Image (cartoon, rainbow, N blue to C red; front, side, top):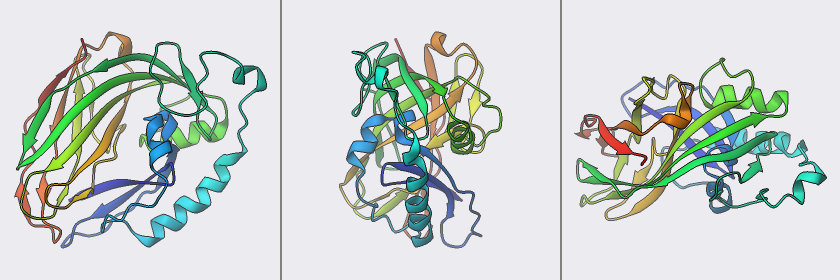
Length: 256
């Protein structure tokens, strides 16, 4: 069972982590969170204490962070009223730059309050966004392809993001598999193995606790015309790897 990625120090470190009883398989890649949910970079200052995180991953994140500091935002951009230096994009036409050199513009943002439960764990979806991403450097292109597990990004690309809060209503500590699949009404079917990333995968929750997480996916079929997406909530497990609940059926989230 694949437990995918964790966030360290404002960067995305995507690595394959497996629960006990399975064979480990790791494919690390990195991407600045501004290209996903900018607010994550402001709140994720410390390495998470989830037991599924590996010490080797922390070292990799640290070395990559240094490499991404070279991009400098053009001075003329810094005085643009639509440029947001830090914090989340909230209005159409607002944009920011990630540390790799990608210009990230908000195309559409829709609030949502849908809550879905799987195995006594609730997923409360609070926001759906579509972002236009314009890599300005070769490093930015490389990072984008790595983060989304693809080699198809050659220039401007769009990402769809779902923000959610996951809460453990069980009387014991559990691990979750996050969102394991996403399907748009434009015909795209995405998984962590095919152009999708979910920060909830591998998250550990103690009794009654909750954490904010997000899913992001590469959308190539009429991204601005998407009206709804279907998602699958991954399985729920004990820290030792015992299955408490299997993955859910597709759940529909509406953008309008």
